[in-house]
Length: 471
Ligand SMILES: *Cc1c(COP(=O)(O)O)cnc(C)c1O
Image (cartoon, rainbow, N blue to C red):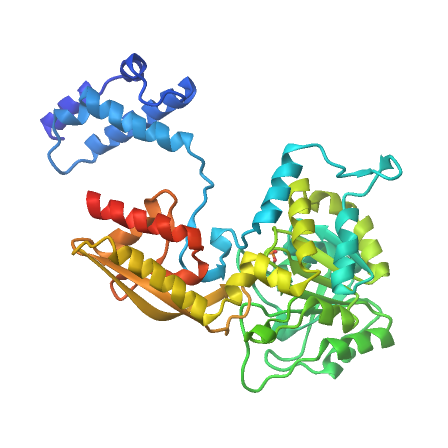
C-alpha cells in the first residue's frame, strides 16, 4: 500500500471526534443522536474502504473537519428521509408494478387518511351495537356492481387464488388447460400456487388448443374444480382454441363441479368502448355463471392492493369460513380505499374521470399532445442553449401484466443536455426529489407524458433547470 495512504488510514478519526464536531453546531437540528452516531460510523467506514481501495492519489483534505461534517450531514439527511417515497412516473407504463401500480383518486386518499387517523366501525355493527364483520362494508357494493351473489376480499389476488384453491380443492384435483398455466412475475406461477394449496393440477389440452372433451375426459371422482386462468401477460396467436367460460360452466353443471375464473387484472369498465382491446369484464364473467371469480384491486381496477373474490353464495361461504382467511385479511386503510374506489364505479362516467388509472388508459390523443407541448414549451422557456427538448411519437403500455398487445399511441418529451450523456441525465433525474423515472431512447432522456400528472410538469421543469445550473 502507498505509504501516503497508510498514513491517511492512521489519521482516520474515531466516532467521538466527529460527534464532537457535529455537536458544536449540528448541521441537521432535528436528527436524533442515534441517527447521527450511525451515520458517522457509516461515513468513516466508507472513507476507510475508499482509502484501502484507492488507485488514485488521495490527500489529507479527504479527512478535513469540513469534509467529515459534510459527508456526515449527507448520510444523516439520507437516513432521516423515508425510503418509500413519491416518484414521478414518466415511463408511460400505467399500471407499473415497480412504481406502485395504481394511484388512488384524491377523494379516496382523503378517506383513507381519515380512517387511518381515527377509530372506525371496522368490526362493529353501528345499528345493533354489537360486533360486526370487517368485510360487510364492501360486500354489498361489490355484489351491486358485479351482479354476484356474494363477495369477499383478501390481501392480493395471489392470496385470493390460493385461498380459493385451498378451500375448494385441497387434496382433490383441479382441471386446467395447458395454455393457461401462466407465470405472472414476482414468482407467481399457477402450478406452484396450486401445489402449495394442496390441490392436484390436472393439465388438459395442448399448449395452443384445448377443447371441451379434453376437460370432460379428465373428470373423475377426485375432481373438485374446473379452473380457467386469464393469460394476462402473454397472448397466443395463430392456430389456437380455448373453451369459453360459458361452455365450461355448462360442463360443471352437468357434473356438479364448481367453476373458477382467475381474471388477473379485473375490470368493471368495458375498455373496448374507449378504443382498447376487448377484455371480459367482471360483470360478464359473473353473468357467464362462474362460481368463483378472482381479480386484483390495483391493476386495471385502479384501487388499492387487494384480492377480490366474487361469485356464488355456496362457494364464497366456504371460502369465507376458511381459517387461512385470517392470515390474508386486509387492513382498514385498504378497506377504506377499496370501498371508496368501488363507490365511484356505480357511475361509469364518474369512474373514468376520477380514477387516475382509468383516466390515463382512456386519455384522448389531443389531451396527451397538449400535455407534451406544455412540457416541451416550459423546458424551451428555460432558454438554455445546452438544452434540447423535442416531442417524440411513441407507445405507452398498460402494465400490470394486462393487455400485452395493446398499443397506446402517446407523445413523449425527449431531453438532451449538452455535456451530459443520456445515462447521466437519467441518473440525475432518478436522484432528484421527487425522483423522475423515464427511459433512454436514441441518446435522449425520454418522458412519456401519459403517466405524468399535470401538476408534475412544473416539478420536471425546475429539476431540469437545476441540472443546467449545477452540472
Ligand atoms: C396479476 C395476476 C395475479 C396476481 O395478482 P396480485 O394482485 O398481483 O397478487 C394472479 N393471476 C393473474 C392471472 C394475474 O394476472
